[in-house]
Every structure is written in C-alpha cells, then in structure tokens.
Amino acid sequence: QKEVEQNSGPLSVPEGAIASLNCTYSDRVSQSFFWYRQYSGKSPELIMSIYSNGDKEDGRFTAQLNKASQYVSLLIRDSQPSDSATYLCAVNSRNSGGYQKVTFGTGTKLQVIP
Amino acid sequence: SAVISQKPSRDICQRGTSLTIQCQVDSQVTMMFWYRQQPGQSLTLIATANQGSEATYESGFVIDKFPISRPNLTFSTLTVSNMSPEDSSIYLCSVQTGNGYTFGSGTRLTVV
Image (cartoon, rainbow over all chains, first blue to last red; front, side):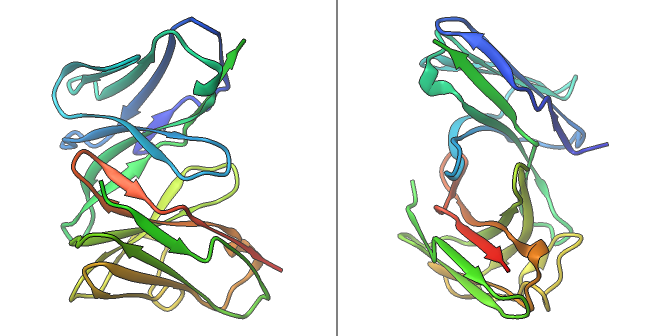
C-alpha cells in the first residue's frame, strides 16, 4: 500500500464549478497534512496546511481532514482556468533517523475548462 | 517564508560524470530536504540534511551515489555521482517554514 494515495486524474471541471480532490494516507500517527499546487515545469507551492479534524477555509480553498478515516480532501470553489495544475497531497511523518519528513502523493491533475 | 536559491537550474551531463547542486536559504534552518521528481511522477525524498551530522537517506538512496554536504545552517549541496540516464530527473531542495515546506526552483538534469 502506498503511503499517500491520490487519483491521478485528469479531473476536468467547468469554470465556476467546485473541484474536489481526495487523498488517503496509511500512517495513523501522521499529524500534519498539506496540499501543494504544481504547474508544469515549476516547483510545488503550498496552498493549505491542516492539522486538526474538520474543515479549514482560505479564500476559495477548503481543506478537510478526517483522521479516523485517514482521509484529506481539498475543495476549490469557483474554479478558474488558472487553477489548472497538478495538486499534490503531502503528509508529515518521521524517517528512520527520527526526523520529520514529508511524503507526497502522486498528484491529481486538474483541468478547468473555460 | 524562506526563499531558496537553487542552482544550476538545468544541466546536460555525460554518463559517468558527477553534478553538484547547490541550495542557499535566506534564513537559518535546521533541516534541509532533497527530493527527486522523475518525469511525470511525484516527489521522492532522497535524504534529510541536518547541519553538523551526516544526512539521513531514505530507502533506495545511498551516500556513495548522492553525497550531501551541510556546512552551515543556510547552505547545502547534493552531488549526483557516476551518473547514468536513469538519473535524469528534477532535483529539488526544500526547507520547513511556518506552515509547511518551501521548495527551491529545481534542477533539471539530463544525462546523455
């Protein structure tokens, strides 16, 4: 089982619709969860971080966390063509040396159709 | 959040040679992380570099192939040694910031 799983997509939504991106993780002791956006040829940029169960809203973005189900999601409201990118789910855990590390999912490619 | 300067941005190298990638951070950070992103794939952690101690490598990565230096709290290098075409990838450094992790702009490596 992969540590962090995402549907690779592509997920196509019309402009103005809500895009829903999902992620599951395997490490039950994970405490920190992140969503990154990566445009083609660019490095990932942080959109949201979430640490507690429930919803966290930031502008058009809402992250949802359910630790019991080991599930994280990202909702993008009023999707714009500029939102078209690959969205990476990332989960914080610890490596063999005891240091914190971030494990990334394979990413979901989002296409917003004008 | 921290700003990372990474160089080179890209390079084309002959197989069997080595390339050293540098990352400079505009603030002091305890740990720096090195990732590889192969074409069309997600990020894979290579190693964690803590200043003053040897880097911690993830499964599948070894120090002889990917030696790392961390001479101070703002700088780190990753060397890709004895390169083969399978090493063609994007290499990224990262540091932890207030709410997450920030990445350098990446080094696109092509081995021919």
